[in-house]
Image (cartoon, rainbow, N blue to C red; front, side, top):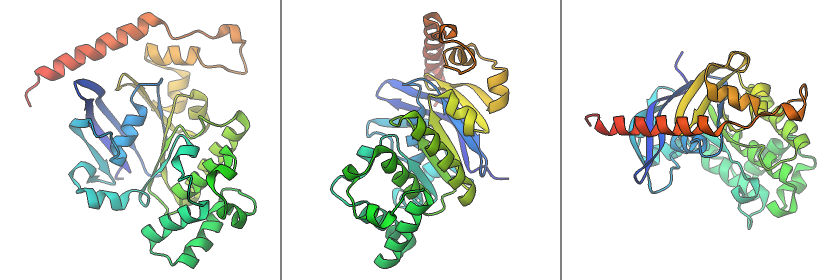
Length: 291
């Protein structure tokens, strides 16, 4: 079976600084993989590399990214843009800044549907109402007429989820979609993503720093630190028998209902220092490799 996403030895640099150091991972059709790590680990940068949305000062120095067996990096910009929003979709982290504040919700969904599916305006608006109903938004016709600031943060996130799944994508990159939401809404959003994933048959790369999110909905997981993969495997196996000291430290620092708060342990600073030293050593080795 051809993987939906296959990243091999991906290296990305911003100026003289490496932000991804030889990242390799696979995502099978319909699979949900968690991409876990602390802030600055390179999680969102990997997602941007797949989407072709790296910052202007970022450069892919080596490696490959294949979507359904096709090399994304070999595609022209116009060809790649046709995939984005239709076959490859994004659920962004901040729903307030991701929606256009001067456009009504309905106009934004309509534009997406008309661009990718070629629907008429009337058909696009009717489909937009159906999409909002799919994500459990009450009175979708009224919500379509509102501006983003007139709806709650949870509703804005539901709108973005509806837009992500609107064109039956093969791959959805969810970039910390629950970060700005309260705990109750977080759970609803995760359940919604899982339901839509099953309905549309999509694979999901769940970018998160929350191991609780990974435990709930991810079949597999990849642990990232300083732009390199430290551990990878089935979620149940990694959480039950973590092999890397960093993964064990993350688990020890994660709040759990079955143990007291006093049992929490921060990630040891000497471990972080060791990991960064290893990363810099790998940078030096990579610099001496023949081009």
